[in-house]
Figure (cartoon, rainbow, N blue to C red):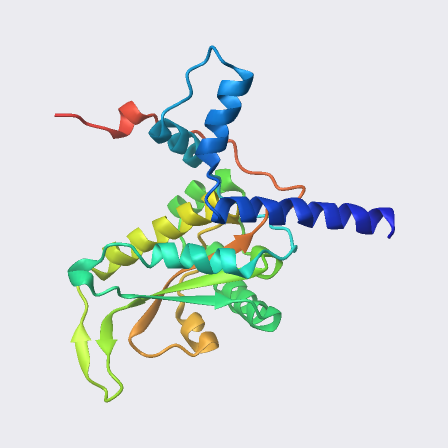
Length: 247
């Protein structure tokens, strides 16, 4: 085995061991507590809530993805977590389309970049463009083909039976938004990076993916590992005191 092959095998071995530990119950928090008590016996470990808050504070939106594959079951498990989200009248008005096929991802990128080009050339308006400039975004979207998976989230505006029967869904935007938030959290806690991409308009997604008339695209979420040269904007989140009002 060459040195390069050996390094790659060791790399994937480490990742596989990580996933085995995570999904067989040897929790991250338990390892953190054991490490703290062993290495820093005079330090009181953080509470579970504080520990999870710290983990979530490490989440960052990534726009440069590695083309390395990720375990598909991890992505499916994250989607399963998202599907446990609360919804209006428990109607669960969402569909998650997991796109792995490189050719389909190429078609999505091609259509998305065409819409983005029109947006950046004037459809967005100067105020919106000014808000985007600190993020360094433009109409070129390599994440749509670099990331090994795309999760396309559709909202079901109404239920559609096989016989054409329709039944209105309620609180669709709120329900699907909660599910997407849970999906991003699950992906982050599983060690994967993600990005919310909302090309506007998104009608082309229904056409490319052959979705039924009752579904409307809500978000495109590339999923994978950050690229080795990945960079994120130096942004600061609001403090708790800025977003929390206690009465």
